[in-house]
Image (cartoon, rainbow, N blue to C red):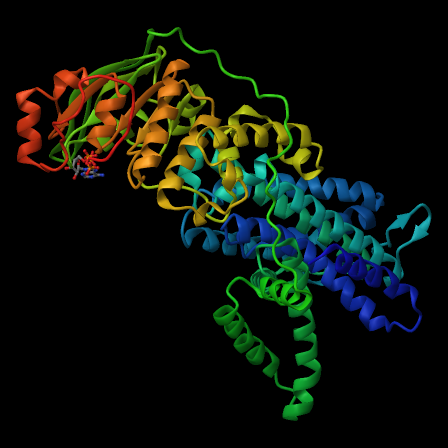
Length: 611
Ligand SMILES: Nc1ncnc2c1ncn2[C@@H]1O[C@H](COP(=O)(O)OP(=O)(O)OP(=O)(O)O)[C@@H](O)[C@H]1O
């Protein structure tokens, strides 16, 4: 939606209560839409972006509503103090529930949310001091500078200011350092962990964020209705909020408002119209509602908002404008100290991995020095990827040790290994395809900044964000992807995606770079370019370990080779010596004979090439 339309919508919304001809019903309806939008905005982040399904958001609305109802009626405290306490209570409850339930995966998580949603509902209905199922009545209206918000037309403004602020904060959050991590939750959790990002923390963060928005909605609801009872905080409403998020479209904050408007309006209209058409007072609206839901889920899986947005673009002849200029220059991020050239960086000592009876890696030892490129080669199934995974903490070792700059890697999770200065790429490319190339690489630099959720939501993170984007741009330009900054990563060719992974690993400022088949899928020219970049990194003192099948690439680039076969180390040494080794020749001739190219120069600068 363009800005002019946005301003028109906001002006119409602002003007509606001022016109005395606007029916009271409309105002009340819009108030309910605003209250629901707050809850659904939280779900947008939690379910739409984070992929965590929660049926329990209505219970958090209940915590906000009951806290203020009880504190203002029984103790006589100000609604503003009650809001603060409500937020604190919600924070605590959501944190504890989140820490427990978010560990559950698959369908156990939604089931978990159902369980605590029901528990909280029955708690509201059974506690004597909360009025049991009768609830609490006589709640005073909110007052702002002496002005009572008892009138629906006044609280309307308070509700919609809250909605607009929540939309602004949520949008800001998604476009930031923590936002990138949150956007990785759904499909890139494992990859993000290997860049040092604690994904479990981010799950709890968005869970608490969504609960706090629901709490604000409950607070406003209690003071608008002036009475609370358990029924609006039950499971039915939890499901309805989820519907609103799905129908509106989880990709945009406007989807939350649209989904709430559509569902509440539809429900209301069906309740009015159906009895007249069908000449009966039975609850047929629920059946029609269910059928409509199925149709929406079938034909508009991403929700209605993206469809409306594309119609709007066609109507106005607006095409998507892609930025081309790189982000503005910004001060460089701090770099970690580098080990002296030639000093020991990685020391793998008798590492072993058994899968049941199969010894995939059989007491392998090797070491890597600063400013050295080492290749790990071998026929298919030799154990290269397993060795790689043992070093990167993806797999636990059966025995042996991996030491990096004096620290044990084999006892650390991948997140901690990244923190120490180990960057990696993946054998099967792992990108966030709908995020831009620039954002994907900025994710790699996550640990080099400390911007938190609050400063991101309040948009006070811009100087730090500029540094991160500048660093990401620098790395992309270095690997030759400077023309694709704003392209969606999923649109790149496979070879370019592999290069993007290298830029992302470089953005982490690693001391040791682990590359899993970096040349796979690259064209001749691209391999040459990649070889040049790796050569330059070596000159700068970077240590690189690569697993690769392309023998020309490996022979021309590496200083040192380890050859594996059936999990054991077959040979080790300079490329020129290794390629003369009879055991190596036999292993390759007995396996995939195409792989080993004997006609390569013994030494020389990196050229790259095809096997
Ligand atoms: N998770 C696992 N469970 C059981 N066996 C496994 C597992 N991962 C690997 N293996 C086995 O361990 C051996 C080594 O596999 P690995 O993937 O490390 O070889 P590789 O040299 O990387 O092969 P490629 O070049 O084909 O990727 C193979 O026999 C493989 O089948």
